[in-house]
Structures are given as structure tokens and as C-alpha cells.
Length: 315
Image 1: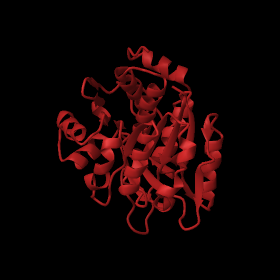
Image 2: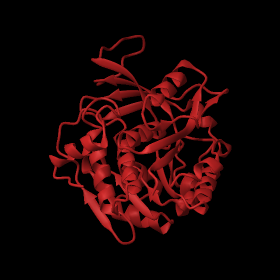
Image 3: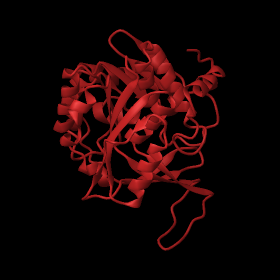
């Protein structure tokens, strides 16, 4: 399989503050240790981690015609294996941004502006361009109001008809529509990679096994559940694996889900077995939690494998 992936989805500027234990009263101020501006959003995060794992990536999405958008695109251009030529500039919306409040235990709360991600549409995907990619990843369903629903379904359907492998990652649906927005897309989804919390809302089920049955009955070929402190769970019609969380001091879980997805996709394009894809995903997702931000600890594929050895991970 050719070593490249097309990531289409949300691109965000993340303003991280840590540690945040309480919000200031109106007109008041609270001191914290550090604030950082970083690239965020599922498409950007997953794309960066994939590139660090040795995969060539093209990212498709939209930013605003503003300083935040220029910062994000320029930072992406610094990565060795990322093509930013498919990132468009919205004339109507500002760049999407998130205030990420990182609590002392590593958990996070978010204040989010959808911004230019609401200006993503079906016509923003060049199908002639993506037909040279073995895998199309849609990153951030539920946060693309101009793309969620029928355009998402149409995109995945076209990709499958072109012979591409398809994968889909979700975000939290603040509109509460959940299954309604993605149900028709699921039969065209080879790998579905939601968090356990998102999957519970989508399916109305509570256990990984019940969630898996529901989604595979809807047409999903392979399910990969990100479960935080409970590790991860992957299954298809023939195989089923649980991977416990790695035992280390968590600093920041921001973007660990996106790193997990990148690990799984890297495994696919590297030709790994289903089980080893899950192992790599679990490992990469964990490594992202060692320091503040999403990608700081993902240096290279070799470094990631070395990190895994201390937990008994061998590839």
C-alpha cells in the first residue's frame, strides 16, 4: 500500500491553559502556570502525528483569513511530510479556536468556536486529487455543520467507489443530533474511531460490546473505541481485542484521541494486522499524554516503538 493518507476535517487553534481548577468570577482574574498556543483540530492533529510516524499526509480543511489561520498553516508547513495545498481560506468565517482548560489531573474542558470549519462543504473535496490516496480519513464529524449529514455520506460513498479505504473520527455533538447525522455514512465507513462517550451518545448503548453490535449492524466494518483511562477496544466480525491503558503519569490528555487515530491509520498503511494496528494506536495515544499539547512527545516512529518497549509492546 502506498504510504500516504488524505485527512479532511477540522483545523483549530488551541489556546491551552494549565492547571485550571476554577473559572474566575466576572471581572476577576485567576493565575495559572502556563499558556500555550498550539495547532488543534482532528485533521491537523492526526495529520501531524501521522507525519511524525513516517506517513505522507495531505490535509484538507479551512481556516480564516486571519493571523491564527496563517499561524496554523505555517506551522503545518514546518512538518516534513505534510502537504497543505488543500487547506482553503474562508472569506466568511474566522479560524476555528478552542480554549482548552487543562485540569491538574490531565482532564480537559473546552470552550470552542466552530469558525471556518462551518464553511466546509462537499465541493471543497477534489475527488480527482484524492483518488491517488489509498486511505481517506474524515476527522471531526459533528463539528462541520456544512459537511455533516448527506455531504459526509456522499464523500465516503464516492471514496469507497473509487477503491479507497475510509476512516471516520467524531467530536462531541453539541447539537445533540448524533446518530441522525452519521447513520447513512456508516455503511461506507471501513474504520470508525469514536471515543466511548461519543459512541454511547450515538448508539444509546453503554458497553463496548453492545456499542460494537449496534454500529456493525449499521454497516461499520471495523470499530475502534477510545476509552481513556480504560484503554481501548477494537473489533470487527472476526476479531475483538481490549488494550489496557499504559501505566504512567498523565500530564495532558489533549488530542490523545487524535494521536490514537493516527497510530491506527499508520498501522493500516504499514500493512499491520488488525491487532497490531490497535496496539500501535494504544501506544501512540498514550505517548501523547506525557506532556502538554498533542504532538510534542510524538517525535518519530522509531522513538515511539522504543517508548513502547518499556510496556511490553513489540512490533
